[in-house]
Amino acid sequence: MGSEPQLAPGGDPEADLRLKRTLVNAFLENVPEAVYFKDRQCRFIAVSKSKAARHGYANPAALVGKSDADLFTGDHAEEAREDEGAIMATGVPLLDKIERLNWPDGRTTWARTSKLPLRDDSDRVVGTFGMSEDITAAKATEESLEKANKDLVDASRLAGMAEVATGVLHNVGNVLNSLNVSASVVATGLRRSKVEPLVKVAALLREQEGDLAAFLCDDPKGKLIPEFLHSLACHLAEERTHLLQEVDSLQRNIEHIKEIVSMQQAYATMVGVIEPLDPITLVEDSLRMNAAALLRHEVRVVRDFRPAPPLWAERGKVLQILINLIRNAKYALDSGPTPDRVLTLRITPVPAGSVTIAVEDNGAGIAPENLTRIFGHGFTTRADGHGFGLHSSLSAAREMGGALAAASAGLGHGACFTLELPAARPTPAAPLP
Image 1 (tube, rainbow, N blue to C red):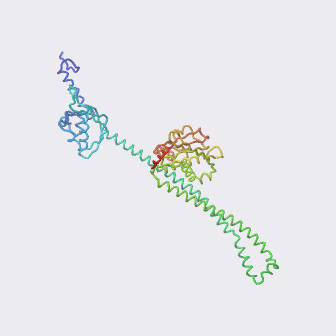
Image 2: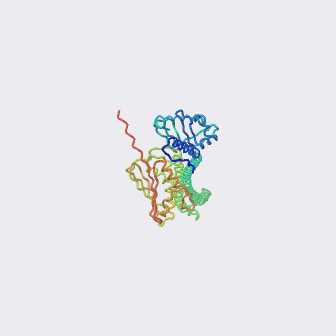
Image 3: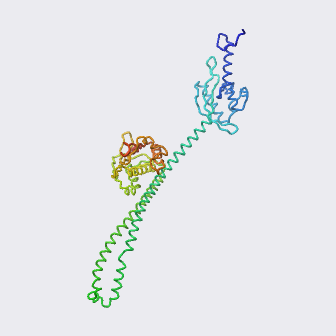
């Protein structure tokens, strides 16, 4: 039998060398990633078939002697040369670097590259070698996901802003209903006023002005006039008091609308501004924005405000969160198990340097399985809800370095939402002159 070629290493140096060449050639011929070896002048001394194909060459030998400057635009070629120079100077490899590759034909691709020092038998660094994986498709997917996430965050923020605007319009609408009722009462009162009989009495007295004394003393009609005038005066005085009360209600409601609108305008102009904020003022403002709805639904508000430092937050975002939480609590109270609807707001300092604002109700409560889903985008338990409010509120809280959490003992046992935000650091006192 003829001898078969042996690939196992043995004592023959030439056989060992042939084995190494066979293994290297097999590797460079079949490896799917782009593999290269370079000398100290950053010129290719060997490349994989996949590397050559990536650059449009059928034969890998065509790249031998070339450098990155022959294959890429100048910016990437210069960056690669700096990386390889640092590797040869320090002997430290560069692993899993994400590179943007700009090609001469205008294309842009992405690669994950690892570069290492190439050493000879004496352990001297004689060049570099590396492996590059094309991740253009994965990068495009990642960028699409990032854009989708950004669009989702933007949509949630807009939904949260819409939630605030809806709350403003809802409360203005409630006040306008009260205005309409008061205006109707005033109009009805004026139409039913006793002014017309007074005009008739005045005309009758004018007719008798030649002998007014005899008319009032002797004429049966004239004798009735003093009593009629007394009764009319009492009625007009009572009517005047009632109409003034309605006019006063009209003025208060108009002032309330102006207050709601001006408050919303003030918050809207402070977008993006992080500043020290009084938590009590923020809570009271959010209550005023919901005042008409809470009054109409007979919600009793309990305030439990403990001394706390100012918040370090964005005014509009905090208002957005609190209005949303108070509105949700109002809806929960509408469908709650008790007619005594109680909304409790608590402000509590936290030793770790933050402040919590809790919005608690004794309403419908939250099912245990929903506590982990309630902040999810699009999740809602209301038939007319859109599921953006709590999700956007959570996002807004996180953007300010805070957190938003929900707790409930279950259906029928109310719920509590707790907003935690960083406290503003005390301003150092100015040095004495």
